[in-house]
Image (tube, rainbow, N blue to C red; front, side):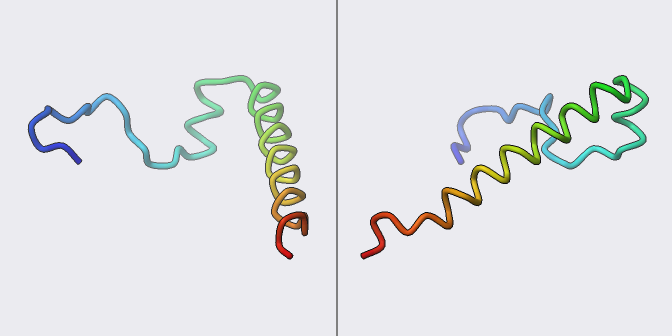
Length: 55
């Protein structure tokens, strides 16, 4: 990390609770995000299991 530049404090990398997300967004929107995340994770695991190039 570069010590010369001031840190950006507007971004908080900590996880957000389900309660807080549901207070700020609709249940349908949150459910869509969960499904998208699950699909991305499933596709990534398919890539990780691919034996291509391991020989």
